[in-house]
Length: 105
View 1 (cartoon, rainbow, N blue to C red):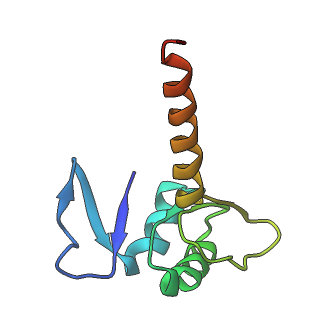
View 2 (cartoon, rainbow, N blue to C red; view 1 turned 45 degrees about the horizontal axis):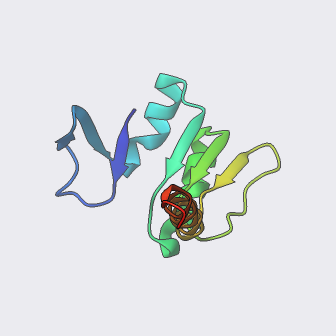
């Protein structure tokens, strides 16, 4: 697992033993490390540009946490995560479980 960022203050830092690299190093590291899957966690306005860089670097599958619809070549797989929808489902499941656990009077 490798992380990239555009903020120079974050680059070269280590988070849980993983170094953060400047975004410009993405193409070289993707090729060198034979990376096929990228995880996209950028602000909505940066998501298409980040996805374009991932695809140009050789990434063939993107797990996107951005709300934007990404435009990628047909041979690139994109899985969109919708965090608000997932939270709503989780909350509903918790409420149902709590209601079922209540003693019946």
